[in-house]
Image (cartoon, rainbow, N blue to C red; front, top):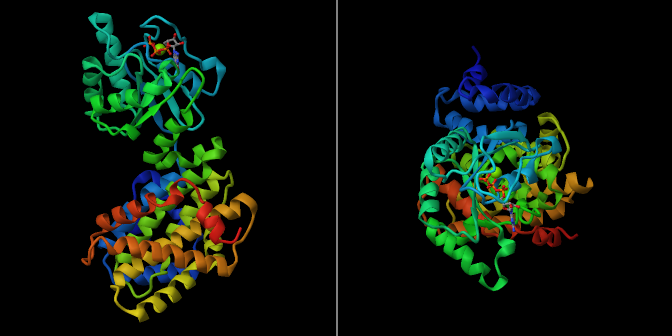
Length: 415
Ligand SMILES: Nc1nc2c(ncn2[C@@H]2O[C@H](COP(=O)(O)OP(=O)(O)OP(=O)(O)O)[C@@H](O)[C@H]2O)c(=O)[nH]1
Ligand SMILES: [Mg+2]
């Protein structure tokens, strides 16, 4: 067995084929470089483990599989109405009705991005109610993601709280949608949302007010799904062009934090192969959001063309001459900022076929590095562990205005 096979064996089975493809797409120099980096380390070293852990979600995102999203909640709150908004094929539409107990059995259909499951009300009493509740719970146990629907007029009372507790005990990622917001007078809307949040023990921004009947804010429910389900990001981008930047941004943030963690590993150069691999996978993911299919090989060529590895290295030299900042901090900030800029450059590329100029790339990288250094400095002098650093980078980037809009980058890049 070669060293590479050893490494491959550590990936979960469902991504191994993809990892091999990516590996095969690397040029001979990159392969040799990567392996020589690893020969100093036994195959079970932290570097390999770290790479496997970090890249698995990324790989699943880039080459994904379909997930089960289960709609669950009390009876008559509009679950089937929401389900009908999501299903692709009219044939699969569920029956909707004004009386509680319209849906008696679980049903599922293709929602393009994922498989969606509608369930009967999970709060009913009596033996029929009990049986329906069990169905809803069993679907929820098999879910990859839960959309918990409540009724804004009905509010969150004891029964709803109990159901919520029962469902959150399943430890599935979820979003809470508060439906029928069209029936709530405008001036009490905020109060209604805050109240629901309070009763569920959530923050108000964890609740998405919706109108399932006309589709209002369904996009927000989908974004919430994407935020915790990286594998779905690409499909969402294709379905919802208006959210593309925000989806790409989530991908960029994740990749940038991975890059920072990689840069923590003490190695002589920061633009070594894992960083190129991380950025290439990010580019494949962004391409998919913009409805392009590119091979990992093409993506790594694109990454090379933009020359950010070189740029990062010279920035590292410049800044370390100034002194005052620990090397790990500089490496981490530069690895993340080149990844962010690469992500943005890829967005511009897939959007309009534009290649940003070398000056623009430099300016953006410097700006982003300064921003990250300023933010990370406040986290203290001690070198954080990989998880801590990823959290810090993620937080810094999520709090930046770029999460909403890329206009800052557009104007810096001289658009
Ligand atoms: N005003 C308003 N009514 C809605 C909305 N969504 C659903 N409804 C109505 O609420 C009633 C119940 O909708 P369903 O989608 O059947 O609710 P459900 O949660 O599937 O109900 P069960 O299957 O009985 O548990 C219907 O009369 C819908 O027309 C909405 O956004 N606004
Ligand atoms: Mg129903």
